[in-house]
Image (cartoon, rainbow, N blue to C red; front, side, top):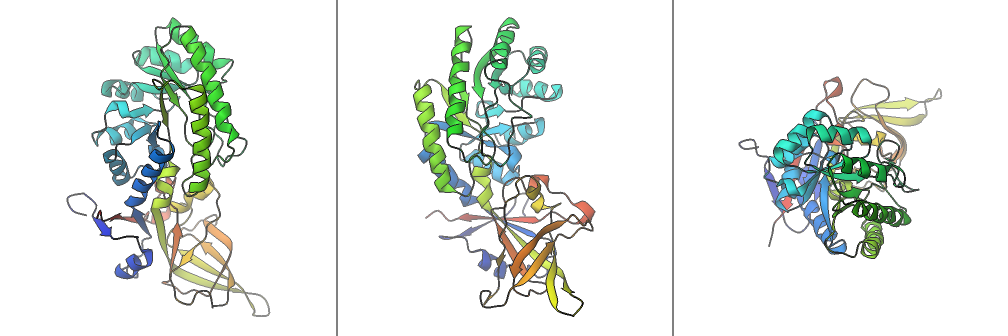
Amino acid sequence: MANGTPEIQYYEHELNIRRVIEQSDLQGLDQALIICDLSSLERKLRLWQKLLPRIKPHYAVKCNDNPVLVKFLADLGAGFDCASKNELKLVLGFGVSPERIIFAHPCRPASHLKYAKEQEVVNGTVDNEFEVYKLSQHFPNSNLIVRFKSEAKKALCPLGEKYGCDAEADAPALMILSKALGLKVTGTSFHVGSGCSEMEAYDRAVEKAENIFRFGELIGHNMNLLDVGGGFPGIDDELFEEIAVAVNTSVQLRFPDERVKVIAEPGRFFVEAAYTLVCKIHAKREVRNENGRLEKLMYYLNDGIYGVFAAMFYYPEELTPVLYLDDVESRPKFKSVMWGPSCDALDKISDNWLLPNLNCGDLLGFRNMGAYTVPIASPFNGFDVPETRYFLAKRL
């Protein structure tokens, strides 16, 4: 790192993780390592622009607020979904104009609203009458985006219990209240839930949005912004293509007027595939039965559920480790338990992997670790969060 700016290493054609490991002094590094492929973000943006050309992506900063990633996306021209004053500061610090930001949190502290007002970040979400009154007091010239509830039947992380008003009963009431207070409602938003795999969910939500638009226009609001939220997959491009078709079809059917600006709040979509976590086995234990027969092997890694694996609490997806060893397939497999480095007995990564007999110092890789990982990692028990190294494909 020079002058506080992380070094970016360049590669040709494809990033070879094993080669990076071999060229790095990882045996002397007790800290886990994140290998970040910035080019993955650029490829994702191109895919988005190809499949959803009308919808402007506003990256959800909460998903991964790494300043290097945020600046990289800012330089590519992405918009941003911020949920707090500090996220606003981060994004604005990279020269992003306020027009490229939506303050997409329906329940914001007054000091955060005052900061948004100072910085002229006028677009923000609201889903209850108390927040409307708060905006009337602290940010009356903001653009209110009414967030309504419309959840998918199949989603990894539903959000409707916490945020979103009823589209039929509450949304019209909020728009009437806003009108009475002299506030501007300029659009509506929804979130079908993270990890959505139900295509029909988008059409249901967009239909509700159309009705909200019509009511808003009827009572004199200038409705011009539709926010279709997040929930877009980060590693399944085929599923993303199906979702894109569903979203495009619904938006074009119900909002054919191109004067309506359409945005989205993808987070996982951009960053999940960009990170590979490399962990080292720093301790090992054999567990044998009363006859002395080996029952299982237990390994202790230098990262765990209080570190980057914290995402397992929120999105319990099956992890598959990559072993950077020769002749892995030909070796006999044993039931293996993976522990994190802390003293907490809950710090267990997995207890059902079949792996060859590994040794202290061996390295394991975990792909697709870029979403909701580092931002919620902590140095619990005094163990450092992983170091991050950055890579970018050479432009030929």
